[in-house]
Length: 493
Image (cartoon, rainbow, N blue to C red):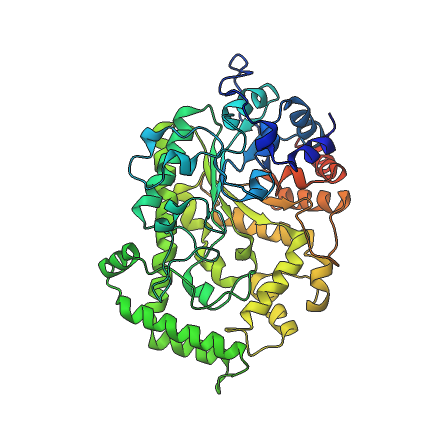
């Protein structure tokens, strides 16, 4: 079976294809084979559907022969259909391995809430691991938070953040609250379950979010966010804030002032003293807003540290790392929040998303959002130029950047920065590079040559590994081969 046939098969909702299939937990298990840790990590994220098909050997052969892939990152727990790899209609999602309920005693979710039904009783993780092992591939479950609360799982609601008006969030930029014990216990149980129940090679978790302050200011590649829908003021965050000496009501009032500031700016009501002065004046009047942002950032890192500790308590040899949202490479504000140096004590690896081809239109979108608030004093072109100087980039001007994307130089600079931040620690940097991440009409597409340049930039920047991204089933074979050609030229495979 050719790789394109695999992709065509995954476009069909496999629930019908595999309905009634008997459990494959333990099926096709080979004798245990020790896979040494490779000198160079070459990772590959993948939707779940291809892993539920009958013949994995062809697919793993393709990954290995084209690009030397030695770590697979399946989106193993998701309620988003594109990560599941199935048709959206009627999609439920959840855990594509088997939840062992003894690890989830203090969460509101039931087995039915968590267990993904799309492939019958097939345990995708148990099925993939032994076959991957035969091909020299280790499997790292990749848990990437959903951008929308799953409507099919009502028990998720109580885990989500609450905005400063007291409304429960249900989508990006909000998400589950890191201070909510139910969510903490769910993720801790999930990671322990994977670590104890399966012969995994490691784990990666990701959340494409930032503090409520940056959301309110529209400092995001996802511009146009309602500044009144930022987070989090749930009961657990309020309690934690008070324990840290923050005046919760002053923080809430400050967020209300920022909401008014952004909405007025969008309506063309420009502050008399300019946007930046107005923004700074708000912080001077309501320093609690900045303290509240720091509370969110600290809570996220404490959450990641707890996941790291839980896995290490099961198996100290299992590496645990974090996907880093690409927005941090456009935003000097989120760059400050995602301080790699401060994360090394609980990070075996970091995977900054450096999708240079799609980065052009994402960066342009970030500029549009930033001009709703902090950068509203500048026209779009000069605003982008200012960000380039702040971030140390040399890239295309505003009117061309969406069509051209960012260069391989962006990949090298961001990689070098990350490597420098973690220098002197065991934490490794495995950047994610763009291979056919979907783009809008009129935006340039990847070529084998452009992919090869980005791959080389990662290692010129000093990274120890690379994650070919964002999803195997999106990639054109010739572009994946372009990555492999560069890796061979570098002597990495």
